[in-house]
Length: 96
Image (tube, rainbow, N blue to C red):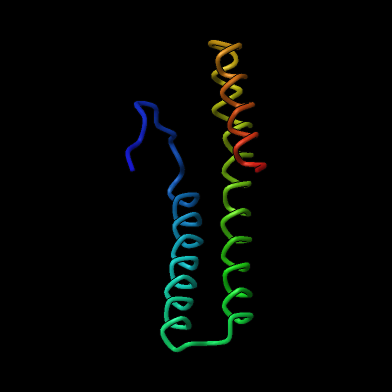
């Protein structure tokens, strides 16, 4: 994955929290892989997958909210129409 030319400054505390949440998700996914290898019951695996999906959705929602409150506000002040269209498309993709 590659970043666009734009970047977002985050505090060390914010980065630490995000990275911690991602590390927990990685751990959950490794646990699910182990469950598959050990031939665990399908429903148990689905429950764990659902937990990871919810964790990802929660983090992406938090990131989207922060983006709208900071980046989009700044970009609207500089170039309103393009920034709003980009925000609408991001919300549409997130909501699917």
